Image (tube, rainbow, N blue to C red; front, side, top):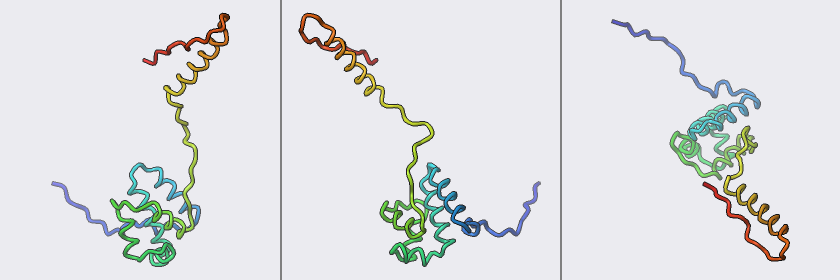
Length: 139
C-alpha cells in the first residue's frame, strides 16, 4: 500500500511573476503561439490580474465581472474586446512571417508556368497563326 503525501504548498499564480514589461511581453507571445485559444485568454487574465483587474476593466470599458467572464476558459470574446483589453494592458499584437513560409499553391504555379510556355510557343510559330498553349497535365 502506498501512502499519500500531503504537501502544504501555495497554489501557483503566474500573475505573481509578471513584474516587468519584458516578462509580460514574452508570456503573452508564448501563450499566443499555443494552438489552444484558452491559453492566450488565460495569459491575458494573468496579466490583467498582475496589473489590477478593476483598473484594466475600467481602461477597457468593461465591468470587472464582465472582464472575468470574457477571459474564462471556453469564452469566445469578440476581437474588438480583446483589442481593447490589450490596449488597456499597454500591449499590442503583431504579425510576423512564419519561419517556414507557405509555398504558393501548385495549381497557381502550374498555371503561370503553362501560360508562359504557351506565350513562347505562340511567338515562335512561323505561319502567323496563334496556337493554343499546350495542355498541362496536373495529376
